[in-house]
Length: 197
Figure (spheres, rainbow, N blue to C red):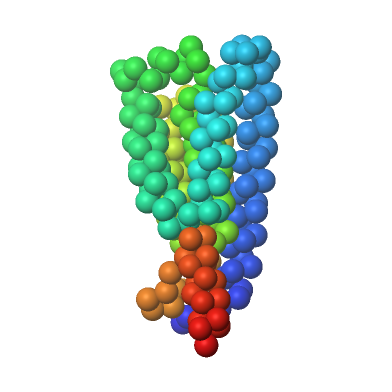
């Protein structure tokens, strides 16, 4: 049975807003902790390392969604690999996190932001990527039971990903969501036709 596009659209947008609210809370918590320890300009620099890419990727999703999808796909696969490999105690990242904090969890939050924005317009793509990210976090937690931050961040992302995937409206054959450049092209084309007509 074909799902109702209108109902699915409302459902996916509710999930996307819920995910972005969760990401905003996580970002505020991480920022507060970082500005407290180590604090000062070092803390500001650490926050900028993940905050600037998160905002930049979110802007890319808004203005160039067609370009953003493959970029986020590559980044999701890379972060998922780091999540799993980082759970292996013999790998250097585990020791680095003992000294510097939950690097993998912060990377998840930084990536979940633009994925949440993507879920507003392209829930199927966002759902698949969020599901992969959340599943990788749970696998990492299974490998290293001490990875509590990954469980805290991974479960909501996995749930949001599955919901976006399940509620995504079925695309029309041959249809694709246009990005900003496509929309401008169509506007210019219509205006030109009116003038010549």
